[in-house]
Every structure is written in C-alpha cells, then in structure tokens.
Amino acid sequence: MTGAMTRSGQGGVYVLLGNPVAHSLSPLMHKAAYRTMGLDADYVAFQVEDLKRAVEGIRGLGIRGASVTIPFKESVISLLDELDEEARTLGAVNTILNQGGRLKGCNTDWIGFSRAFEGHLEIKGKSIAVLGAGGGARAAAFAVLRAGGSVVILNRNVKRAQQLAYELGCEYEPLEGIAKLEAEVLVNTTPVGMSPHEWECPVPVEILGNFKAVMDLIYNPVRTRLLRGAKEAGAFVISGLEMFVQQGAEQIRIWTGMEPPLERMRQVVMEALGVTRGD
Ligand code: NAP
Image (cartoon, rainbow, N blue to C red; front, side, top):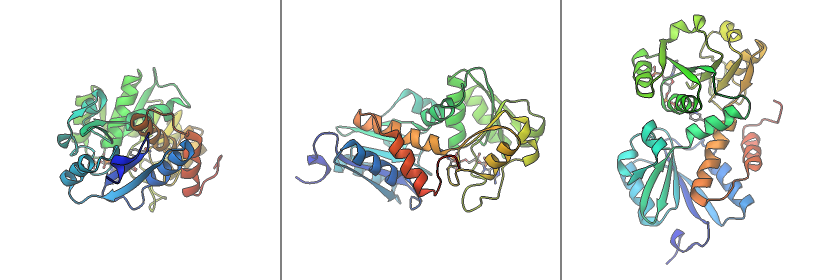
C-alpha cells in the first residue's frame, strides 16, 4: 500500500477544504511548521466543488486531518461523525481529525482569537463590541463570553446580529449606533478593509478614539485602515495575523499531539505578507 496510510509516526497528509483556496497562507504555514518539527508530513489545499465527496475522500485516503474554510465551516457538520463541545456550541467546524475513519469536528478559530487577544490584554471584565455576525464574529464573541468579557454585536444586517446575540446570550445593536456605543474594545470581523480594498474602513475613523483597543481579524494587510486609524487615535491595536497563526497552531496540536513552532509559523506568514516586526 502507498500514500498516507503507510506513513509512520506523526507524518501523513493534511488538507485544506475551501473555495476559493488559491490565496490561502495555510499550506505555507503548516508545511513550514512540519519541517521545523521534523515531521514527514504534507499539507495540500483543495478547491472543493463537492464537499460530501471531499469528506468521503478524507476517510478513503486515510488523510489524518483537514482544515475547513469558507464557505464550508457550517455545512461540513452534517458529514462528520462527532463534534467537540465548542464546535457544537459554535455551530462551525474549521478542523477535522480523522480517528481511524471516524471524523471529529473541532473549532480552533475561537482559541486562536482568545490566544491572540490575551497575548496583549486580558478579556475578563472587558466590554467588547464585535462588528459583524458571520463565522469570525461567532468565534470572537464565544471566546470573549467564555473568558468572562461582555459582548455587544453590531452588524449591517441587524436581524443576523439579533440572531447571533440570542444564540450566544449577549447584546446587539444596529451598526448605526456605533458612535454612541460604550465599549472598551472594538473587534472587526467583517472583510471590510481586506486586500485588495485596503483603503476601506468598516466604521468612521473619527470614532476610533472612543475605544481603548481595536482588533481586526483581517490579516492581509496586517495593518488595515482600521488599525492605522485606531493607532493614530491612541488606541492599542491587535492584528488578525496572530489569530491566524494561533488557530493553525492549535490544529497541529490536535492532529499530532505535538507543540507547534509558533515563532517559525509567524515568521513565514509575515514574510509572505511582506511585513517585518514593528510594522
Ligand atoms: P462571513 O461569515 O461571510 O461574515 C462576514 C460578516 O461581515 C457579515 O456579518 C457581514 O454582514 C459583514 N460584512 C460583509 N461585508 C460588509 C460590508 N461591506 N459592510 C458591513 N458589513 C459587512 O465571514 P467570516 O468568516 O466571519 O470572515 C470575515 C473576515 O474575518 C474575513 O476577512 C476573514 O479573513 C477574517 N477572519 C480571520 C480569521 C483569522 O484567523 N485571523 C479567522 C476568521 C475570519 P451581513 O450579515 O450584513 O452580510
């Protein structure tokens, strides 16, 4: 027999399932991590046209683990055998672990958020405004609530904000109310300001001084218009890059049981994005 089934130790093949995946930095980051860890492992991105067959392929080919990204984080759930508690609560899976043909769905986005944020500021006791009501917002709000912070969700479509607030047990406001909002931290989870629309900002720049800290989930560019405006207004800023690295690092822990080389992972992602430390 050849292929993943015969690979020994913690090697093997890991895949990314998404559509599109062409610009994903996950293959670069994971491969660099495996090399540094001395693992005989590979990571391949697949643009998935048929999710059901792709998931069958994980079982059939003995693929050890998969990352799941847009637009499959929710639809993949019905194709799996079990979910961990957090993925079930969040209703989203970004990580699949293959346990001898039984596929377990996990979510590392919220852990990535939590580690990235708490690397700088404690969440407990903070009031945090989450802009957006999609997958990223869900992960961020869940992480904040679990760590003892309070959340108010603001979204363009207020019905989605209301629904998410109801599911997670937090507050919501229409997006227009942001100027009068009393929150210490603003977290952007919308794609507004993402490359190639780097000049866009999801909120008026004039209000950024209202917040002590601003985090953007976007990591390309690393310094978004939002973060540049917030820094100029005197707020502490956190980029989405560390969340991206941390969610990938947690996937490696789940798949291999080994400690990932965080510094090397940060380094390759920063190089790929053309940033240097302190940018
Ligand atoms: P998503 O599920 O599609 O949700 C997008 C949200 O943004 C929705 O609430 C949507 O509002 C809102 N939105 C979209 N365009 C908008 C606009 N022009 N003005 C105002 N609101 C707008 O996407 P997602 O998975 O949460 O991802 C969102 C961003 O977070 C992406 O840039 C992604 O790369 C980033 N992200 C980063 C990480 C990381 O590890 N750093 C992890 C997850 C996500 P409506 O409901 O009104 O449509």
